[in-house]
Length: 476
Image (cartoon, rainbow, N blue to C red):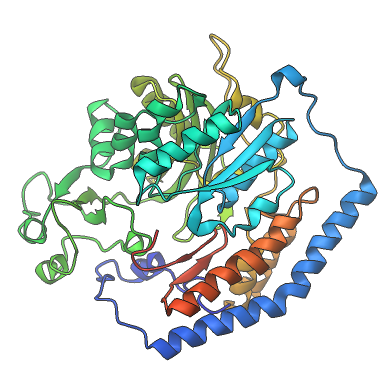
C-alpha cells in the first residue's frame, strides 16, 4: 500500500552505517506526486474492501455458531462507568473491550478532528463524545472532561493519551478528580516522566541505572560540545527532541560525527523546544507498558521493540520489571507508563525514555480476564501480584501493515515469516464479538482522513492503522 510505512527503516540504515547522518532538510514533494499517492492509496483500500468484509463476516458467523461468551458476572452495584480518551487508537479499543467484557460501561472520547474514528462503532462503547484538542485549547479540554464526567456519571477516568495530550490530562486531573477517580499521574510527575532529559536525570538521582544525558538548548551548544572530555571519551551519543516528533524520532545518528557543526545547525533546537543529548547504549531494545497504583506495579507487559511498532509479543524480562517497580515505589506513582529499554549484551538494562501514557503493547492482554480488575480496583494491602499477559496469548499484529510488507518482501523466506505472523498471531482490531471497528477503520476512518488530506493538498508520510492517523511532518 503506497506510503503505508517505510520500506527500509532508519534503524536498519544505521546498522549499515552508524556514522550516517540521516536528518536532512526535507525536500518538498511535488503536489502532483502527493495527490497520486493519496489517490492510489484510496484505490487500494477500495479494492481491499471485499477482503475486509469477508474477514469481518467470517469471524462474526464463526463466533455466532460457537455461541457468544458471556460478559463478566459483575453485580449491578459494582458496575463502573469508565471514561477513556484516545478513541482513534487501537489501545483505547482494547481497553474498552476488556472493561465491557468485565461488565462495565465505557464512555469513549476523542478530539473533534477524529470524530470519524471507526472505534466509535464498537459494541463495547456506550457513548462517544468529542472534545477540543488539548494542545490547542487546554482549558476547553479540561472543562469538557469535567462536563462529561458529570453528564455520564463517570466513576473512573483512564486517559489513553496521544503524545501531545498526556501532560494536558495531568493538568486536568486536579479539577477532574473532584468528580471521579483519575488513573493518571500528577502534573509534576507527568512532566518529569515525559521529559527525556528530566526522566533519565531523575532515574540516576534515585540510584537506578540510566544513560548520561545533557540538555541542549541551541545548535551552537551541540556544535561546541566537548566530546573529547574524559567523561565522554569512548562514549557515543544520540540527539533527540524532547518534544514528541513523529518523524525525527527515528533519527539515531551517533555523535560525535565528522560533520557535527553542519549536522547541529540543521536541527530546530531552541530554548523553548530543547533537545537532549543522550548516551548511546548498545544492545537490544524492548518496550514495556506498566500500570502503577500508589507506588505499586499492578500490571505489566514487555515486548521486543522496533522502529515502527506494529507487532507485539510478550517476553519475560525480570530486570525490566524490577527497574519499573523500583521507580514506581520511589516516586509513589499512580498512572500508566510506557518505557523503552536497552538490554546490553551483558544483560544489564537501561531506560532510554518514558512516555506517561498507555502503550500499544496493551494489545497483548487481548484475552486476559483480569485486566479490568487491575485497572479499576485498588490492590489489596500487602499484595505484590502483577497481572501479565497469559502465556497462551497470541502475539498481536495489524493486517494492513502485514499485507503491505508482503508486497515489499524480497524473498520467499520473508513472505513465509510474514504469513507466519498472520496465521499464528491475533489481528489487533478484529475481534469475533466486535468485528465492526475493523471494517470501519479501514473503509471509513482512514479513507476520510485521506480524502481530507487530498482536499487540502496535505503531504503525509505513512498511514498508522494502530494509532488511527496519517503521520505528517509536524503533525499530531
